[in-house]
Image (cartoon, rainbow, N blue to C red; front, side):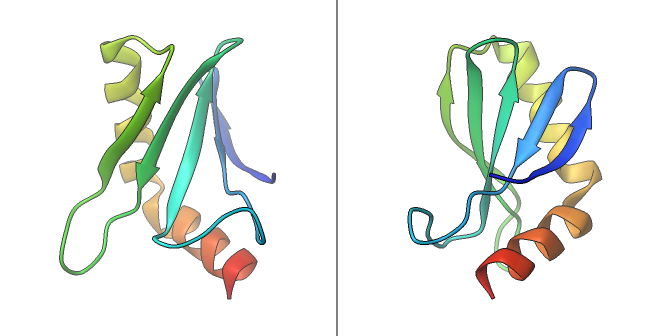
Length: 83
């Protein structure tokens, strides 16, 4: 699972096939067991928090903003892995 961004304790990762699937999304890890899954923005909709596990609300917001800030880089990584 390649780490695309590592910043402020967050690790943004894109999982590859065959386990992973569309729609484009990333796994953002924080701390020993915090995880939020964020769907990437499309022309039709903004980025969206999909699932949250063991992460405080304020850290989910920080993760979301991190994904927004680096959206183009993250989407390029998703496309490179998923075609």
